[in-house]
Image (cartoon, rainbow, N blue to C red; front, side):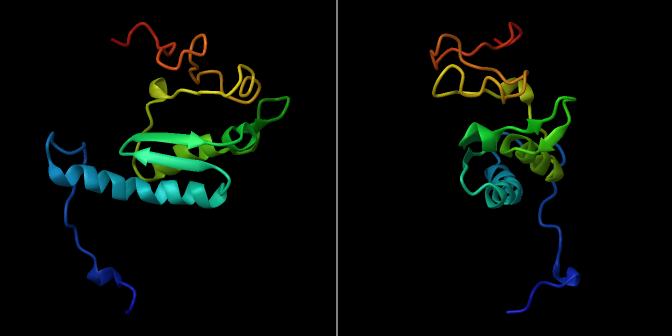
Length: 137
């Protein structure tokens, strides 16, 4: 089997602003599109598990792998899974909604020193309630 030449490629379906509600193809194309980003991140961080159901992505792993390392001047010295995933999804044309991100920890201080300040955490370790902004209803 020979690799595809550029002349063998054609546009099957073009979607610039999401698929219509109930469109059976839209969900499949979304998953195919984000697959490249998920696999690139998984390859770079083999000890981290990524689970995706459409646009809901969960990352399981050690905080040292999940979050960026920064120096005293707040410059990134090592990119973590979280930032790399956002970057790779953006490369695929997908924009992450940071207001929907959440960090669930095994202990109250697991991610305290590593996670970004905008990343939400559960209140009082009740995993059903998140500290979402009051604008969410």
